[in-house]
Length: 339
Image (tube, rainbow, N blue to C red; front, top):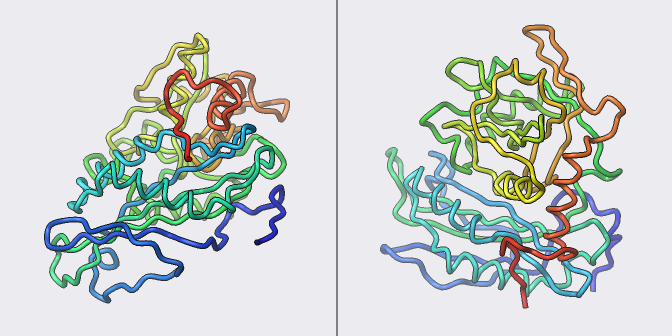
């Protein structure tokens, strides 16, 4: 059996024993197949390579103190992949088969689930792409679904620390009525130019504005943005941002903690009024924001002035991870046990 330094795992890819695959052909999905290969055979004219017919998901499995493995809101990931498939005209992978594939791949790679208390988790990556040959621009007739797992360390090795962000106006991640609301690879490719520029400038990531007016906050790198003020959790509403499952969860947790919640347009100018801001997503759960720099207006919006995350942000964070890890009751019915 492999020996891992569980507390010092990177947030990256580590080979595991098995992955699950399934093929859509002749108008129907086949059976789930188990593979031990890290590679796929793909046609050189596959639409997933040429025309961006590709969607993916990301979720985690958590080992509890009780020795039980927990999955968090997997049905929402399955439904979002169905939604993404529809958005770029792919055959949708059934929700029930999605769940079957998840449970099977976790069970077959159980030894790779990091132990409770290590800070590490088992990251799960479902993928769907057009795999038949098409030279003209049209949907594929065949599709491949696969899911692999890899143990990952915590996103923040030294604990949660505030990060600095740069507002971007010269790159659009996605346009209204485009693919921004779908979890497809093209959105991430479109964001890389801005993200690399921000990191080259010493920032953790970039904040994208709406493509039409450059007036409203859209996404926060590859994550959703939120701000907190006057006991209210506020997150942008937009036709071009991904509906984050982590953000959906934080909204419900905020309500359970007695906070008000708002999903609406958030102007750049409103950044000055927030007491706390952050980015949220599967990888880091929450990334508290220390500073946001707006180069066009030469403005710096400061939060976490003592160098520590805000108290409201941390309340939300600890409540969410305690449910995911099984340390606290799950009143929302979000957690599924993997036998």
